[in-house]
Length: 284
Image (cartoon, rainbow, N blue to C red; front, side, top):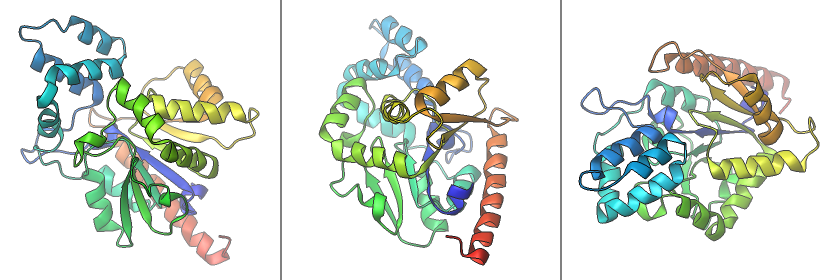
């Protein structure tokens, strides 16, 4: 909370945040990754054998499954992505508003959509810049004075930038090492708060694990991972030991995870109080 108040936190938002949005029809929601891939299998499996792709999804090998599906779709891949993530015209949800009200200087978005960007621009009237991982000046977020939203996996506005498959992850790490160096530096200087994310992203895991094992156990301030999933104490201990991730559990309340919205709202109130105190004692 103190790091949030001092704007020394990087908030990382994943598909679980976008999932709160609803399209213009009043019912369609952005798919989670597994759901998206399973739907894609249904789209291409007529007359083709996709059993190994479905098996890969069930086994959690999502990057290879996505790579194979992309090749099956061929030139229809980008239109399919836009049909699922853009055409429904998703509107920002209350959770997007609550995250924006935290007024973090840096937000990393793992999502391709621009749902969060629209509400953040409305709420935070100060200068806001959206950077993509392959922008030549992406490292500006480290020392700039503005607000930054960094699209870690690219944007649907530029489909060629998307990092969505095993091949694309590997290529991005090599071709965009400047961004990953900046990411690594941010992990050392800021506290990361993961909201609506899983713990299987290969890039994030590699960076987190590198840092976790470069420091002696217990000497580095932890990063925080919000989840409602019933994670065993063994897995929680492994995440803390191997990735320096401390698990914070919240009660989902319902299938739309309204409990997460309430948790972020409460966090925002506490951050506001802390900022008032900082203003009074000038202990910036």
